[in-house]
Image 1 (cartoon, rainbow, N blue to C red):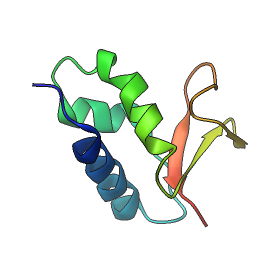
Image 2: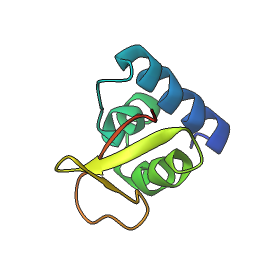
Image 3: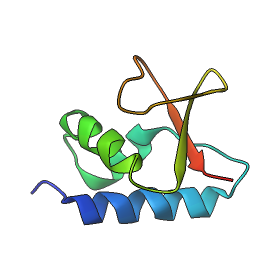
Image 4: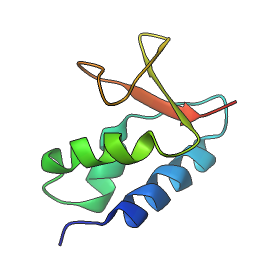
Length: 78
């Protein structure tokens, strides 16, 4: 069963809080934790992440999680 937005948000925030303010994580870590077939879940994870107090980065620069091409990392917003 595909996780809903609330489940994705809960998983994103739980991982972000576990890592703390100074550590980032790959959104695929959340997708992998929520579904065995995790790749189709990635657009939903990115979409939900922009609604949360998270910052997306790519090569150390802040980016928009929805429009960034390639891998991103997420961390708690300052």
